[in-house]
Length: 221
Image 1 (cartoon, rainbow, N blue to C red):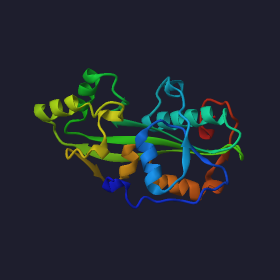
Image 2 (image 1 turned 135 degrees about the vertical axis):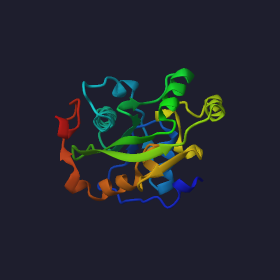
Image 3 (image 1 turned 90 degrees about the vertical axis):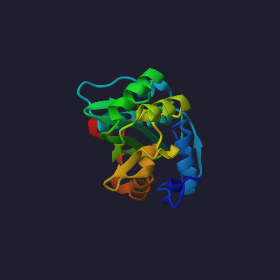
Image 4 (image 1 turned 60 degrees about the vertical axis):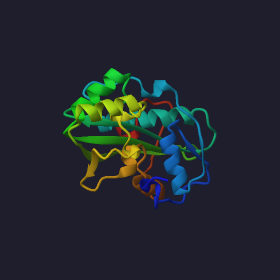
């Protein structure tokens, strides 16, 4: 078990509904399991992550995607406490999602090399029974060392960039990545466990009524 998987916070669920993770990410499942949550997995379709609104910021985009993923599973469920998330990196005004191929991964890493950047995870917790949800975006700041050509080639050849926002996985133990300003490690991996526990603990006061089928989270409706 990686160090970041230890001593993760766990909250009592706010309803008696079973938790459903609306993500096929093994990293998110590992985080929830390490924290001691019991849950099932229902994967949202790729369509939940399509389209970027004009002038949309990285935190706005990941919040919207997390909401859309949760909403898709809600439409198929008669009960459940849905947890959905979406993660991107952002550097110099560019939103950096998962690389399409090795060339795209290389261009992302060259942009991040030697620079500070942010990782944002949108998180949505939605009670089907209560028709209420809460949506937030959590930010973590990182800095990447300047990558030598050898370091870059090794990472690209390893294929560890596949399926990972920003073309890297913090959990892979890359010593050229460092979190700054006390940010959340689990947020960089894909699910901010500290904030998730707070959202669950305070769900009744934070969650808003929501109409299933709308395209954006409550604050954006």
